[in-house]
Each structure stands twice: as C-alpha cells, then as structure tokens.
Length: 174
Image (cartoon, rainbow, N blue to C red; front, side):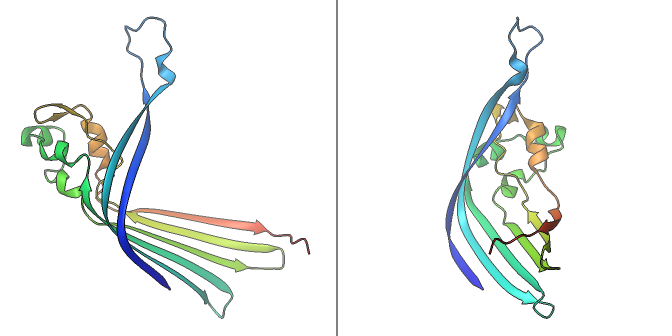
C-alpha cells in the first residue's frame, strides 16, 4: 500500500457547442464551439493498493482519492446569487458551499487469467463530487447567472458508479 498527502492545483476545461441564432445570416454557427476553464486548489490524499486474492487467482488493484478544495474560481459568482434567483431556478441555496466540499474517487480493477490465452478484467469506479467544479457559473447581472441550467446540472446529490467487464485474448511472443 502506498499513500500520499499533498496540495493540488487543478484546472478544468470544457468545450461547449455554440448554437446559431435564428436571425444569423448564412453562417454555419451550429458547429462552432467555445471553451470554458475553471481553477481550484486544495488538499489531496491518494492511496494505492495491490493484492492477490482468492488463493492468489485474482489480482486486485485499488486507488482511493479524496480531495478537499480550499478555493474555487467560480465561488464568488455562486455566493452572489440572489435567494429569489436560486428558488426560481430550483438551485440549492447552499450551492457555494457545495463547490468546496470533499470529493471522493474510488477505482478498483480485478484481473484473472482464466486460461493460458483468456483473461478477464472487472473495472469499477465510484465518484462522489457534490458540485462539478468544471462548470463555470457565468454572472449575468447582480444576483443572476446566464447559465442557471448548467449550474443546476453540476449539483450532484449522489455518487456516480461505473462498471466495465472485459474479456481479453492474450498471445505472448516468446
């Protein structure tokens, strides 16, 4: 097992489609994109673990990452939102606190060699992030955002789970 603790600085970027306005004349704006970037920094703890289990027939690799943001570049825009705007758009009233809550990412890979030429992998990942810090809140005017739907979608009340099963054919040149 290997663990490390340190400070991390992250920059997240997203590419979004820009849609044409109905009154635009002759330009093909439907395929244009724009990019947004946000920054955050905080304390990160990562633990890696490897073991052989079930009579050493299965190899298990696990990685747990816990990240506590200390700052977020969009937090000021979230703090300045008017309570009426939050209620009208069904956005959590403590959305500014969600952007600096602890996030967790836990990955597991189970690998087994079934025969000389066939192996099986099971990959699982569970991610909990209360607010997706890659979503940049765009202030419109005092207490309002131009992208309230994006901010609403960035709020996550539960974790995300991914599971992948792979069957591999292995051939060794020896």
